[in-house]
Length: 564
Image (cartoon, rainbow, N blue to C red; front, side):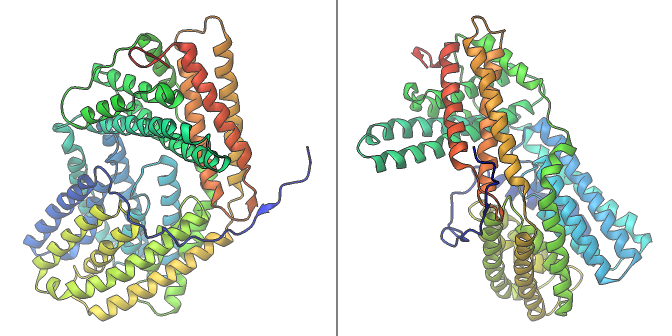
């Protein structure tokens, strides 16, 4: 083996094709859309009735927390939303106190950049999910530039806390009607993804023998489908592990996820139609479909063994995110200072634009930048069209903002730029809660800050390299190899301990999911060691073969009457 260090991966071609492609909406797009309308609408309409619409910015800080945690089971959602509200209050408190102590724009931009970096790191480390750190950055940056005195801070924080408590209630309310909805949906996604892989495996197995080119294409397609299925199964387990008490309904969902896992390991013996039938049954409010199994005890013991493995400490999860935090701090600070140098009156828009760009790697950051710029420019035109209507009075202004809140959440899951078309006029209208302003000035500031934030933010991503991405791949490869060897030893053992092989199989599956996510993130990064693509593919295929062998060793059934 050569001892020479692998050469760095050069700058890759930045994609344009497909960046603006419109996809399918999220299956629960209406939940965050309706939740944010209720969470924002009640406080805003109350302030409107009291004639204090100028305080709406502070209630918006709490209200927008209703956008988070819609995919989490309600036990976990209660905790997550509480932390989101507390995180928002902490961010706003820092911003308001800073604004009350200094009017120096240089200091305010620096604090805004540091807040954005901290919010990015914490949101990624906790995997809170969409909309991620963008809402925190939007609220805290705007609060920094709101005229403030120390005496006003407690009252403004109290408004944000009250609205945050209301947002918590709005987020938890659907649990009264469908208490197990999130975990049922996660299980249904896993079943559908496993069925899709099984169908593709059967369809491509016959055609792959026709030619080497067809075989390579079919193999790549199967690998992608299998990775998607494994990710969906992993997400389903995460959802089930977060539900708290294990009811009989919850145990049945676990068995269904096990069936999806087995289907991924033994696709040729899978009845995809039956998996899809179970998924359809889970979408409704009826009873969870029953699953017979000859190995129920071993499966559930394996689940208990996996539940006993705790999550990594927060400090360990923050370490690999340091390059992304540095990118965010540098990009947001430079964007804000360039905006100030150009004489723009609202540099926080440039800060938020830069903060919104940063994704797992440079390629994804570029794509988000294109989406952000296109969405904002179209959104500015939409604001120009709707401004005369919004200026009819405060009530019209509030109703227009609510409509854009709904539109943003309804569209953003199809593509980020579509959601930005509604977010942009909403942000412009929010600035008018304290009084109507000249539309031309608002539009000009927004366009300049969008372009500045996107260009400077992307430049910072290029300058701050993520050399740790290569190390993470090596660590992920080592983890997969250890998990595979452990599973292989249990397969070879005459009598593995109760639940041991099931737990090992699921641990290997989780390690393979993490490897794929790590490899995908590193593949879009610049100026690092070349991604060991062949090693990753070999590790994945070897790992999945071991999973299939484990299924056969356990004697598990994909469906009753069919050996895996």
